[in-house]
Length: 411
Image 1 (cartoon, rainbow, N blue to C red):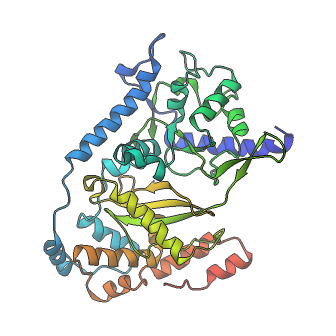
Image 2 (cartoon, rainbow, N blue to C red):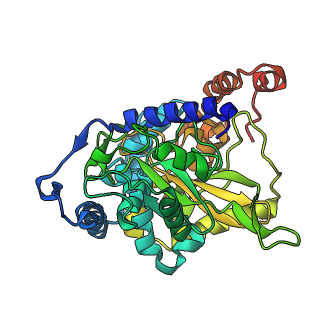
Image 3 (cartoon, rainbow, N blue to C red):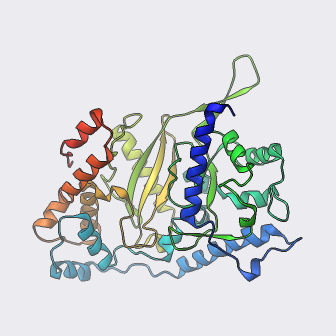
């Protein structure tokens, strides 16, 4: 590592420290059945307990009641209810009050990227790699490839660690927090290269991995509970490809451009016309109407592959990575994290609230009454709140600041 990379690595380390702090790295849970003893099979102790959580989730999903046909009852409730104010908070209160969307243990645990991957891959089966990135917890990876001694200390062999990474993620990997987004996270994860990641994880007293946590479940402060027990996950990097150098057998890494597109769902359907505008940044390449329809069809195929017992009363944001060659993968599935709040930051946009309102009215035979119902339906609700947020996020000066100061176009 050259000296000029020092400040960058220090910044990443600080961000990782913040992740661990927010996830409660210092607040871990040790269960008597999983206490570590010298000579114990550590893979069974840690990975097995993660699989038990998944098994419990799958059992709970199987027992979930599917939302009954409440069309007439819900319509009556809306007709009799106090008129909804023309803002996001009032709209969400109505949606949760009527149990159209749930905030539950399921929506909390599905916010964890590792649990999410394991639960969804159970239902997707052979389609998993078509829709999703291969995902492993960092501790799960270390245990599977036997990269630590019985006390949890990493075996000081970077070549062995790198070989294990190449075996598990032949096309490259990204490092991400198990929950939420890191301030240091870019399109290739927290670290720009595998070398940066290896330097950090083998650095004494690093913020990424600590030996004493290998056999402990890390409590997430995002959820105020233990989820997968992991703070960090490793995922495939599908934007990376390997091409042969001219006249040599050596392969070079080529990064392909991709655009992150947010779609919105309700239960087992994609909400039409609910692809938001970016707050400030411009897209790397413009999407055609055909590409928009292809992305919506891709996510609809994903939803059709899931059982209604899972999707009932669920509202998700789905981030899709669209490569410049048209290839797609699901980057993230965003839930409300078990809290009666927005499941997507883009619900601040009037057109997203409008798309959801029209979708609920069409598919559940509901009717948002009065003038404010008209305002929601026509992409005008929460307009001034959204405009203010857009100006605040564009506090960069120059053209972006000028553009954000203009009233947003609602359609």
